Image (tube, rainbow, N blue to C red; front, side, top):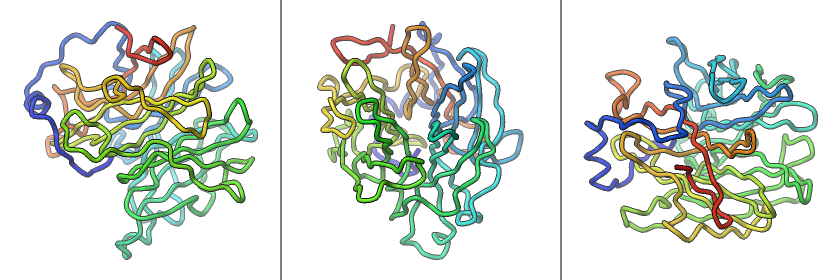
Length: 334
């Protein structure tokens, strides 16, 4: 989701403007055919899946945190804005990115990134991690009144909550800004970092000019546990715009706090651009009826803008693909 444009392989650039998509691969679903980037999903007790996304326009109005739901991961309804009232510390800005919602201590907790009002007058102030709560998965969520963590640039973005089944600890993963993916323990209520805890670096960026390298910037962490392994999905390196160059990679560890080893084949990449689809990435993972599904955004090369005046490769629709597991690693099915 970062707005810093990095180098793109010539083949991908050539394909962005004039490629007509092939029929979708078997198992792929265009779930939300509108700008709905950085999707994160949670399944409620009644079986409904709720998906939250970075800010976007809905019927001519800006939604701070976009929200959609589905009873079966096939039929989708866009609900509106999960965070209709901006936090007091970010009431004058409009940068609400990459949400994640979890059930913590009997209520729903929304983690997201926002630009503080102080950044309007202080160029050294960057985006902050933020926390809001609600009684229902659809919200409305109310910010706790102060940011969780601030820093320079866009280092503190893309939060993801995970409760470690082995230790019971509640963890927050995040990271971008050309820094590593990090993790830190949270308090029991999930609203602050645990006293005495400190961030642990997990997956570093790789600064090379190889056009096949997607790790110049790493972000969009999603962690899942399977058969004794913790799988860390992450994305890089440039989400969108004229030089979009984005893919999903995966690493694994025997511990939720690492060390993580990136899948050795193909630089860890399991999902990259294909004919008709540009810059796929920033995913969520769900289980349904014994199958593993990956929800992610990508740009439809035949429809890369929401409005004619928008930059190319900025209309990121939500897709659903199927994952299979081979030799202890996930791969896109078919």
